[in-house]
Image 1 (tube, rainbow, N blue to C red):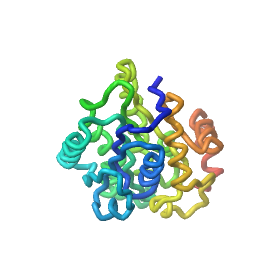
Image 2 (spheres, rainbow, N blue to C red):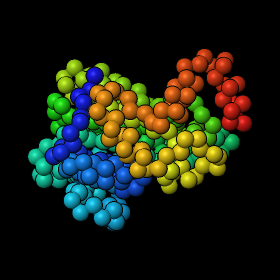
Image 3 (tube, one colour):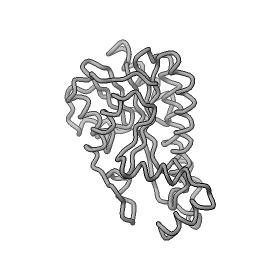
Image 4 (cartoon, rainbow, N blue to C red):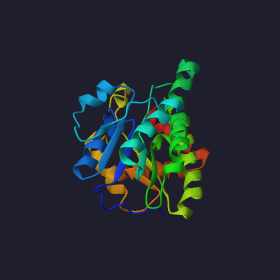
Length: 251
């Protein structure tokens, strides 16, 4: 079990990938609950545009280890420590086999998975008992899906990485959380050309994310009416999964 975080007052939380979407909404939600929040993204201008005056702004590139290390040093100089680190950076481009672009796929995976590993490598020495690290993956990482040829594998790898970290760190009292949202209305999902069931706003996703830390569970997933169905699909044998998915999606 992970530590249960029920009181955010004074908690020092570093959000990497917080200039828009779920990350920005989580930052606002945590500040409202009394947390001390540091937000990171590539663009300082975008971070400033959020107008979160009490947040510590740490512009950095999650795909660059040196950039992350510099942001960490600034964080430690300001706070002398950190209680929770959350990786929310992500990229998405719909992609299928007939339009497979290797360079673009590698770029997407660099953000969705490699950046998460770089962040973990950067902050592991700073994680303490009662705190930990969290990763925002996706239900798209449960099983193969149409148009997710680059996005899905990176999220699947992130899920596996979080599971391995959880096995290593929770016996030491350090939490590892995996956050798997369904569809959330962001600049990334706006690229989809299909109806997205159980679509949530970033604000709804932020509340579900923050509330999920109360339980001590490894996985935080939402909305349940959608994610439970995706879990059911993921449990099916391939001989049933592939035909059913093709029937449901038309592809």
